[in-house]
Structure formats: structure tokens, C-alpha cells
Image (cartoon, rainbow, N blue to C red; front, side, top):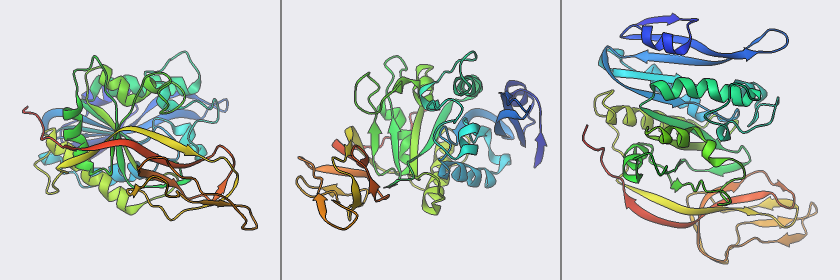
Length: 349
């Protein structure tokens, strides 16, 4: 296998990468006052035969690590002689946040995944977004955006997807790809203003902007941030292998995809009303019945303060593991509405 490093811009590097080779490089964004470069690394695995391009976005938030490991392990096992097409692994769209071990770049505090397609004349996060999206949108046929929950939470792996009204890509197409990751839940994210999912510009996510171009894209949430979870890493590797096989990049995977998905159509964060120490025995991927406590909040001396509950049955997506809470902190992430749906096979090529 030939491996090279290139200083060429991404478009030229992709076009000139030899068949059956690995090409490493970086997308240059700018520089610090010291002259140190701000750049987004990439790896192009070019198959021996032509075909589509799978783009793996390892992280857009700097503390999301498990997806990067999963992609590294997936790439390490690729046989380029049997690869029909290309795999692009661009591990971090947000190198400043990665270096700072934080969700956002400390230079401007913007959430990168709310700034796509970016702005070459904007703040540094917007310029990183623009550089990354320019390359991804030009070459990806399918994009997978890897994430984790915050390091403060426990969660089982799950998927998040959006629907763009003009993309022509519906749930069935996205589910056929998502099923390879065997997610605990597949959450349909509402991008409408004021929908309550998250504050900010939700349509600025890279997967939504790729959908706007008619390209399938979705998010995979792999455990907690700022840690390496071997089970999540292995799941990510298998999921990527399955998606690559479905795209025709590789022969069929030995790992069977999920036959059904638990589709979540409404979810919410649960906030505290009192500060103190939070303790729970509730685990992710479980049903919590109405009126049952999510956990208990006590003072630092052990005096009970509250036992937060829900007025309806909820399915636990994530639960807080950091016990120190203040009023208004998140202690759980729960599904309010869900159903079981078939995970369809890939449509004919």
C-alpha cells in the first residue's frame, strides 16, 4: 500500500490520489499570531476501483473522541484492493476545540455545528466551518458526523437525524444507513426555531446542510466525551464497515444490521430546581415510568432536597454522572414520544 503526505489543497489532493493508496494532508484555515498553522487534517483512502465517497467527520466538538478512534480502527482494516471508491477521514473540523479539550474553540466560543456552511469572512469557527464544508460538500456521497454526549453524562450509543424538506432524502434512506450502528434510539431532530431541541442555529449542523445538497448525512452519538469507550469504538468501526458495504465500497459486512429502530420523535432535557449532590440508579436505554424518581438530590450533609420525576413514561437516553449540580443543570435527557419502525434495506443502486 502506498502512503504519501501532500501539501496540496484538498480538491487537488483528492483528484491526484493514486488508486490503491493512502494520502494524508491538511486543509489550511489560517494561523495564530505566532505563525503556527490552523489546519484540519485529512486522510484519503483511494480504492483500487472507482466508486462513491464516504466522508467520516470524526468530530465537530473538541471533546468527542470515540468516533475518531472508531474511524482510525476502520481505516486500519481497509483492504484498498477491494475498495471501490474512496473513504475520506477528516478527524476534526474543530482543531482549536480539540487542542483546548472543550466543546467550542476558546477564541470565539461558537458551536461549530451551528455555523455550517460557514463564512470565510467570519470568526475563526465560521472560517473553519467554511473550509471543511467546502471540501466535504464537493466530494462526499454520504457523510457521517460523529459525536458524543457531554462528559458529564452516561449514555448508550444512539443516532440523530434530520429531514430537509427539499433534499428528497426521507427516513427510509437514512434508516437504511443508520441501522448499521445498532443505535439505542434514532432521534428525529426538529430544526424549527423554538422547537426546544437546543438553543441556537440548529439548521447550521453539517448533516442538515449536506441534506440540503441532496446527500445523505446523519449523526452518531457514541457514549460520553473526553474518554475512550472500547465498546463505542468497536460499534463505530462496525457501523462504518456496514455503511461502506451498503454504498458498494466494500463487499457485504459479516455484521448484520438492526432489523428495527426505536424512532424518537420528541425528547427533552430534564433540569434541576435545587442544587446539591445528585445520585441516580437509573441507566440509559431503559424505560422510566411516570412518577418514578430519576434520582435524588441532597445537600452536602445528606439532607434530602428533591426526587425529580416525570409526569409520563419516558425512555432514558442519557443520565447525569457528575453528582455536583446547581439549579438549572441538566440531569437527564429523555424521549417523550417513540415507536418501533422497520429498518429498511438499502434501495437498489
